[in-house]
Image (tube, rainbow, N blue to C red):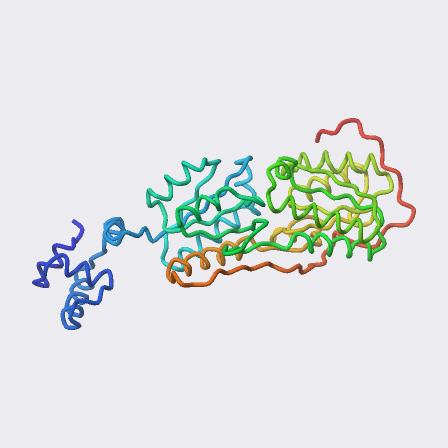
Length: 352
């Protein structure tokens, strides 16, 4: 039978409340009494009851992530899972629990979740340029931070990827290799309609790149599946026979595009170069290994958790805003433009 706080109190000759004060690190206990109780706790191998501790302190000692996804299947993708595991690891390193919230919420549901003390603070993902969740959390004074950012971020904490400059850097790299017709496979159309930050900022970067390098705007919104990446790349190649390169914004798009190129009897990078943006370390697992600007989801998640927990520990802490810069990792998927590129073979179907 498990040892209880009352067993420890009886052995120490004190009240259960005094034992609880020692366990919770409260200071209104004499040093002699504290040392005696701690010795008895160790001797009896007493383990405090975590839910009772949280109830007594009024804190959950946990953080939560709200990650609403239109496609739950993305949780099977390593790229998305890296953020979640990173947050879980960051929370564990700070002796905090971690809760994952999925699906869409209404403002009323979000308020109920916060007031139900499910967590002490919240991390937001899939952040819109004008995100209603931010307004609700500020209204009820609930601690939060974002992986992503809004249009106006005054007084907000976030860590985000610099999509605009990353897209510019990707185009600069490909143009420097002689590519003049470059296809851009970007996030799903619904993301643009909902003004999600990554889609809006990637589109801005694309427009800046097209203007800066005087290129034809070749642009396709793509669902985050290998099949849709295949179909999008196939469609773009058919419509633009002189195309020589792609910029892609997800690993599934990259794999789909490579499969489409292979189905045409072509090769990467001999016939088409592919450049990935905001991908994780999985880029080097794709064949050929993908030239990419990487954004380590696991490290971002860990840092986000620690930023939120620091905010919870220190109510006077200043807001932190981190924008990850672009760093190109050159691998085997990009090369100089091929001279005398062949016309693509006619396709029978757009399905894999």
